[in-house]
Image (tube, rainbow, N blue to C red; front, side, top):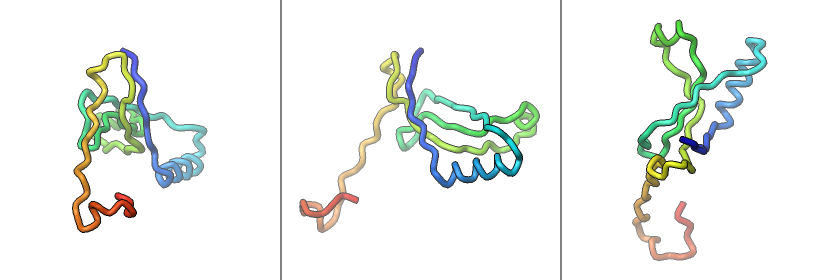
Length: 102
């Protein structure tokens, strides 16, 4: 099955990764990308974490997640996560067209 996914990593997380790599003298980093069958509450089904060694996995060391995202194309149309509907804004300015919704 072919898929395309979008992954978002915050700038602060990137800074931590680069700083850690520089301190350890590493030239790069290995990431494990997970693609789930079902989306979370935000419509995301893709996650990325720092890859772990077999020993780290067996020791149940917690994963360090660096980003998340979602599948936006698949040759299996049933695999694309459902988009979450946002509730309409409520309040005094609901009908005011000059106000932005955020």
